[in-house]
Structure formats: structure tokens, C-alpha cells
Amino acid sequence: MPRYKHRGVRRYLTKAPKCKRHYGKNKVIRHVQGASCAVRDMAVADIASGENTIEGTHEQGSQGLFGQSDRLTGGVPAYEPFSGFESKVSLPGRKCRPIIVLSLYDGISSGLVALNKLGIPVLRYFSSEICPNALRVQSLRHPNVIRLGDVRQVTPEVLDRLGNIDLLLAASPCADLSRVNPRRAGLRGGTGVLYFEFIRILKYLQNKYKKQNHTVRWLFENTCHLDSSTLQQLTSDMGVPSKRCSSAFLPVTRKRFFWGNISGLEHETVVQKTRLTLQDCIDANKTAIISRARTLTSNRSGNFAVEYSGEREVLSPTDYERLQGLDPHYTDANLSITARISLLAKGWCIPIITDILSSLIPIFSDS
Image 1 (cartoon, rainbow, N blue to C red):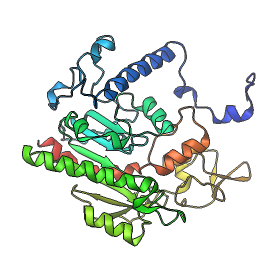
Image 2: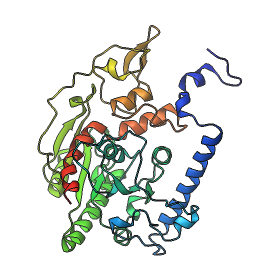
Image 3: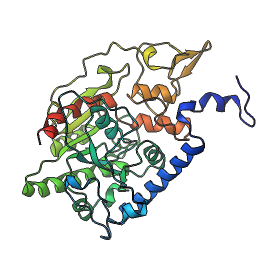
Image 4: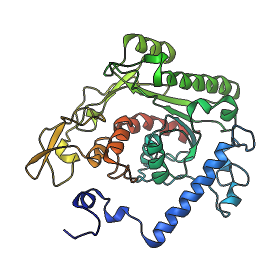
């Protein structure tokens, strides 16, 4: 093992591999991309004040969304079609038109990851998120994301300037809704009240597009561990949910409820089990003690699922990323292990979202 001055063994073992680091010229390029992203965020911040407007046509993807923003970024269009961190897997025989996406409580942009894997081109991806750690990962992996800030600031005036939204994604915080939390505040307190912001935005878009003969596809996700009163309220607002589990795709148990107007949600995949084992999803130098992992949570104490050098250890952030369907080091944005685990535990399971959104390919390709 090479020796690093002023760095311990822990730093050597946890740092990103060389292919993920940036030196010299590449480091300068990263700095320029960050500056371009900052200019874009400043432009988005002016939406509510009416200083900038966004046209709703798909043909304006190569022009400036906010007028002079292209000039501020050196003449290079700031809003080009996405080339995400993930490798795109386009389905043969299908070519979709670019779509406009609005993602509420966006987190680490798992929805964009799924769209990239399906090969569905994204013209504009509007993100509503305020968590600093999530925004840090988002800026690194998807610098073209257009930030809208707090979901409570996404007013009708802001929505009118976003253009015709093709896909609305949302997964409101479940900390105050889950039965696992004995101090939960429910829908009327804490972060539980943010659910009603999604309902407000969804109803506004549906009423607006009804007059324009435009259909917005939407998908809402939350935990299965809901109180009967909370589940009754959500069912009354959005209909009967569909239950999906990560065990159909990955060796981990994670049951979630899904609501939406996307075809295929009526088919559940909870019973199915993947042939993958935990050994297939962990680092090569580790040995899995069990074949399937428990539900991924931010609290890893007592969850010793692997062995390393003869000692039992908990799952690492890269293990979490594979068990969520993400590429290793996706959340490696100079964050602590605890911060990365917390982000991953709250994120969406990529194979489930990809499976659900795959039914949109014929819809967007035939338009």
C-alpha cells in the first residue's frame, strides 16, 4: 500500500478510484461546469419575479430558456439534451421525442437516472429539492438540471412558465408518515404536510392541460408502512395504490406504494424474487453472510451482512448504491459515509422506476 503524506489508511480505503478523480485540465473543466450551473440556478431564481419566461415548445431546446442566459455562459446553450452520468440503453425500434419533466422532492435525481437508462431524451428536467447533500450529488452527476428550490415556492405563476410538463414525478418525505417512526406527526405536521403540495401542483396541471388537450403523466411513491388514516387519505386523493418490492430485481427487501396514471401500475411484482444474491452486489473483497439484505435504512447499527478480513461489517455506500440499482460511487461527492447512506436510503429503487416508466416509451414515441 503506498504511503500518503498527512493521510491515514482510512482516507486511502474510502477515496474514489482514479477513474472518478479529476486533475489538471479536467479539474478546470469541472470548475467551469459548476460556474455554468450557478448561472442557471440564478436564472431560475428569477422565475417567480417574472423577469424571465420559459417557452412551452419542444423546438426551443437549443435556444436559451431564459433569454440572455446563453450569453452569460459564453455563447454555449446552457440547456442541451441530457447526457447523464449513467449509460443510456435505448430500446431497439423506439425513438422518443424529448420530454419535459418536473420532479418534486427530487433527492439525487433517481427519476432522471431511470429515464437515461431507458433512452428517453429529456429536454428539460426541473427539480424541486432543498437538501444540501442531495443538491451536491445532483450538481456533480446532472449539472443540466434546472432547480426550482422549495416545493412550496412552485406556485401557479412558476408552473405557467415551465412549459407543458410531460412527466410529473414525486416522492414526498415519509419520515412523519411511516409507522416505523413512533414520533410521526402524520399528514398534518412535520414533513408530512409536504404531500399536499404535490396534490396542489397535480390538480393545477390537470385543470390547466384539460383546456389544452395535453395529458401529464404522473407517478407518486411512498412507503408501505402507512397508518390506516394516512393510507385512506392518499387513496381518496389518488386512487388505489400499487405495491412494488425491490426483491423482484435486487437481493434486498424494500416494499413501496405507487400511484399514477401510467399503464402497468395495476400489476404487482412483490411475489417475484430475483436470482441475484447479496454476494453479486457487494465489493469483490467481501463475503456475504446472508443471501438477501434487509431493508436499506439510514441506521446501519446491527446490520452486519458481510465479512471482510475475518470480521463482520456493515454494508458500505457502494453496496447501498448497487442495491438501489445505481452505479458505484454515484453519491461520492465529498460527502461523509453517513450522509451518503442517508441519501441512498431515501432514494428510489432504479429498476422499479425503470420498469414502470418503460410503458411511456410507446406513448412518447407515437406523439
